[in-house]
Length: 426
Ligand SMILES: Cc1cc2nc3c(=O)[nH]c(=O)nc-3n(C[C@H](O)[C@H](O)[C@H](O)COP(=O)(O)OP(=O)(O)OC[C@H]3O[C@@H](n4cnc5c(N)ncnc54)[C@H](O)[C@@H]3O)c2cc1C
Ligand code: FES
Image 1 (tube, rainbow, N blue to C red):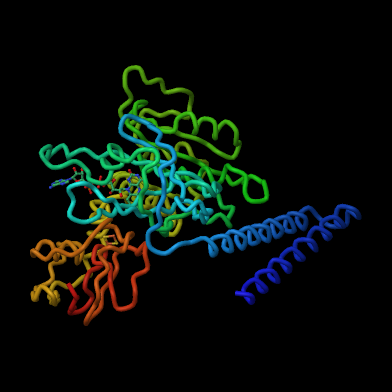
Image 2 (tube, rainbow, N blue to C red):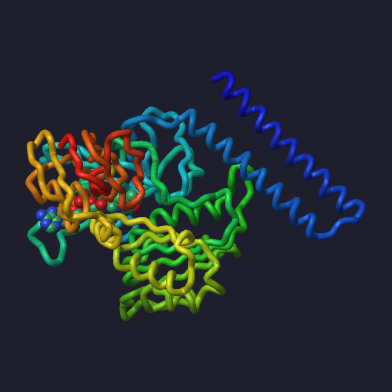
């Protein structure tokens, strides 16, 4: 511990020294006017990079001190209705200790004790505000009704519990922030952030992080294009906030798309569009395709935007996306499953069943359920870790990157498929 503090202090000192040297160099450059603007720019860039590294070290040391394992108790300190079916919950730690920062785009995992449910229900919700607030986290949740084609099914368990039963002062169990869909704040590359409906949450966290002052009280000048897709003005969550952010920050360009504008929905100014967010719209509005894209939206929207961007020549590495529901994961998986062999045997040892693998099942979790084997599950998207199952023999492939790193010799069945004959402890 002492060594870690020493090495952190030494590293911070060296970086501060480098920053000082660059300050001296660029001052002298100005004084004697002997060097070119290019050198100054390089010095500025290097200094900015060093500042970012110092920020990151400070953030990391703050996180090391306050991250937690397992579930921690939080209190709902504020409940704010954003639209008819979307509500924000502000959560503060019940123990009163400070909160670790998170990476903008990450999510929280909740353990919900829902009346009438035999076991706690596990659900993930993205953090919808920036990590700059050490006294609260915010999540913004859409209430899910029964599907239109199955109105007799029960409405969404977790989201309705939040809306109907969770009130200010109530206590709830929360796992520490995690997830791979986040904005790298050490970069300055221009970004396009795209949110569809409640998929705004992780990209809103990114936007707020870019536009709020950082630890040194400075604001990023990173070029940022923000696209929100909603049906109409009734669904237009965070309207005032987005308008204010765009008005206050010249580097932010806001575009709002109403896919089904109502009669009285004014398409105010040239940043309102009466259409879906598509490749066509992006081509019309953006100066070029030279951006990093971050997308969180319903399945169809993610698929069509990814395809349009690829057709436009955007490298796949510059297209980042996150899916909220298992249908999205299933669809995205289907495209990747063609290589999986179908003559693989999967044994569920505790259930005493050996079965021929069916690639159409999608994941090992779905395959087990199709065959009457009930494994534990939560998010069904590789994030919460609830479906972690020990592998007795064989190997699996992940079709999307796990949000929670699985332990050795175990797998997350909701996002994995067998690579060889497989024996699971299920
Ligand atoms: C990383 C991540 C981040 C997320 N962030 C957010 C966020 O910021 N905001 C947000 O709102 N959501 C977010 N989600 C989605 C969220 O985790 C839940 O998936 C969502 O709230 C639905 O959960 P639920 O328990 O309400 O619905 P579930 O109980 O899981 O039900 C889902 C749907 O299935 C229907 N259904 C239930 N039973 C049946 C049946 N027998 N037959 C047919 N249909 C049935 C329900 O009516 C409902 O429409 C995120 C998900 C992930 C993985
Ligand atoms: S069910 Fe959450 S990781 Fe698999």
